[in-house]
Each structure stands twice: as C-alpha cells, then as structure tokens.
Image 1 (cartoon, rainbow, N blue to C red):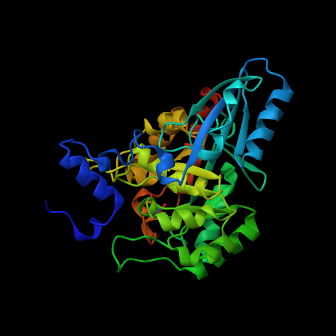
Image 2 (cartoon, rainbow, N blue to C red):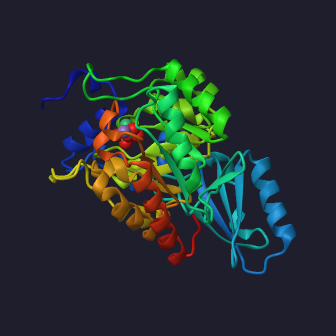
Length: 385
Ligand code: PEP
Ligand code: MN
C-alpha cells in the first residue's frame, strides 16, 4: 500500500491498518470530520451536551443544576427561551459518569451534541448572538453595513470614501492594510501605514474600523487599530491564525473559504470559539463554481442554512461574490431578503483608479441608492437598516 511514511506511526493509521486487515472497508479516517466520530476522542475527554429543563421548572432547579455542573468543573451556558430553558455544558466527560443529571429536579433530558461543531451550534445556544461594538449591534434587529475600499490607498482617498458613506448611516469603515493578493507583484497593502490612515479617519468620522489580519505575527499591531478583525477567505482554514484570534478581545469577521463546505466553515468558527472568543461574524462571500461570468457564485442558501445551524450573525459580501459592480445591488437585496444580518460592500470614489477590486467597487451615488432599496427590503422582512 502506498502509504506516506510520515503517517506510519500515527494512532489513526495503525488503527486503520488493523481494521483493513480485518476486512472492514471503512477505516477510521473515513469518519474524520463526520458526525460519527466522537468529538471527546479528540478533545481529551471533553464532552458537549445540552440539558433541557421541564416546562414550568422552578428557578431553584436551574440554579441547583448550574451549581452542580460548575462543581464538576463544567462551563454552563443558560438559554431561556419563550417555552424552554436549555443549559449548554462543556466539561470533562469522566466527571459525569457517576452523576445522574437526568434525575435532578426540573431536568427533562440530557443530550449529547452530535454535530462536529459544538459551541457555534444552535443546539448549544438557541438564541441569536448579538455582538456589541461601541454601541452598535451586529446580529440584532438592525442590518449593519460594512463598507469601504478593497485596500487602504491614501489617507485622502480613504477620507473621501468615508465621508461618502456617512449619509447612508454606515458605522463600519472597512479597508485592507494587509492584502492577500494572488500575484506577489500586485499591491500588497500599506501595512502599518494603512492602519494609521484607518485610525486617522476613525478619529475624524467616528466610524469603526474593520481590517484584515493575515499573519499571526501581526495580531498585536492590527488589534491596536482595528475594532473588528477580518479573516479572509484564503485563511479560513489557517488554524494557527484562527487560534490566535480566538484569544483576542475583538470581534472577528470570518469569511467563508472559497471552496469550503458549510460544515468546514462552522468548524473554523468553532476554532475561534473554542479559544474563548465568542464574538464571531460569519461572512458568505461566494464560492468557486464552473461559472466564469461572475468572480464567484453567491451561495444564497448558505444564509438561511447558517442561521438555522448556528447562533452567530451571518453577513454577505456581494462584491467578492459577483466581482461586478452592476450586479452588487440586486445581490445585496437578495441577501437581506434571505436573512443576512449585514452586508460587506466595496465602495470607491473613483473605482477606475482603485489599487484593487475596482470593477466590483460601487460609486458612492450607486451605493446610496442601493442602501435606500435595501432599506425597503429590510422593512419587508421585519428588520431595520
Ligand atoms: C477582501 O475582503 O478585500 C478580500 C480579499 O476578500 P476575500 O478574502 O473574501 O477574497
Ligand atoms: Mn477586495
């Protein structure tokens, strides 16, 4: 069998060898990443479960349960819904063996979370996560707009763009100081100088800054200037970077990898939450398909699907999804109709002069009109903008 040498010593490999030798077709690796694979196996005995309380339970039942869980070293998350109270719990599986939680007063059932993603799942936390940043809410009633140029170019141009966004009520100015470019010869961003431009425009306009982090070594620097950190599509599975932003105190916009499945996307978000940062915003930005008329294909169904599977806010980037300014307004309205909590849109005062992504950047006039139309759609689906 042509098995790479490096994996010969691994447990999974040895296990698979034995299973194959016994004539069983699907070795352990087959189950990796699927729901069949018990998560505690990889988590050193960590278990994730939900405890459903009986309707009309006493407050004391809930307090007793949470105290019990905490005494056992569990972390408990209480969700009080209209009809049900649910407690999500994470802890060491072994400490539960002797403790029959099911028989505690007020407890109806104890269920393991079977999905491979746990903390991001709706089972664990049924209510929507609303992320607060300096008085603004993401994931609440209001649809938030994150807009700006693809790259921070100069302080003057950035200022012009920011001023053009303000009349539409945009609170979040987005621009890259570190740019992930396909060509090493293309403009890579101004780095710290660009961050300083963003800082200056924030001072002047009061807008909040969203900017991309590409390298764990720049975390401290980027966090010094950013209100929200963006992780780009190419880094969705950069697990070192995800772990890094899991340990910071800033919200993170995680963009879907251009070839990532929904499950992989949620697993990447799980990396961030597993480290303790629960302020993650998921961004659908189009996936690669056979179509070449558009830059990517917006997976519109990802929006309601993600809203179903996770409590995290979901936003849509129509600009990178289609790569053409003329299609951005229609796609933005579709995103809001589908339930998106926000839009991330590229806007430039002179797209023809943009250092990057000019063809997909909206002129302020078009952007303004689009926001007016989006507002109507938002009202139609019971949201504000
Ligand atoms: C960007 O937001 O400018 C960007 C590079 O996006 P993506 O990572 O989705 O390609
Ligand atoms: Mn761009």
